[in-house]
Image (cartoon, rainbow, N blue to C red; front, side, top):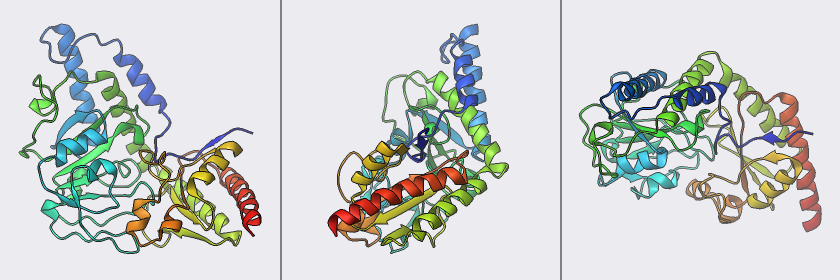
Length: 347
């Protein structure tokens, strides 16, 4: 039986539209900074891609600075600003901000000064969505763009982070979206690319793929694709609960991403669950892909008030379009079978 990929929050399958756009961009010879005909052609593709991404993210009129991904975008946005954040943020934001904001048991962050705060819109591990106060300095929209009906120009923030590979684009390309007039301290210095904000020849192939994936993601969102995903996620959530195990479905009473399910299984370490499901033909994770290789309790769950044992016994299932009800139930059956074996062993 074929494997099922249930780790979309780590990275998504490359869209056909992105692949085609990248192949086409490979034939664009010039450097976007060159003034000859070939350079102008490259610059035109760069400008079109920037405009397409702005339209897809509801960021018309905003500035878009291309980066190597959301991690670099976070560094560009947060460095030197003395921003506050909470422990539920991604490591890329925590590296630059002081994690001193309280988090309640529902995963909601208490923002004290929006203009001095970095805040994720949706958590990659639990899927829990935050309310964004007006004037937030930096919003990590990496998991939200393409899955939620949002727009940069509605969010009332100064800057937002994004990454192509979270919405069907290639890895290694992202963007910082910001309101015009905001000063940035370049972290990569050299040439004057990206209006002097990020030196280095632009990754035109990756940018073309990013733009194509963003357009396709906006189309899917408008067509209700993620509402269908949410229905399958809920079926899976109910199926896992129906077995009667001592489990916790984290955030199932909160507003969360339509594709994300975080399950705490008492007495079964998350990393062990990941390995067991991998052998059974399912790709899931024990948290953020950037930290899941480390066997430790989830800092996100710890911040929400779960104890160390519970926080180390969690898995994240993040699904995408195309997963059917039968697929979801196949995973639930395989997971329950292994969990029964684990419980019998410790009984």
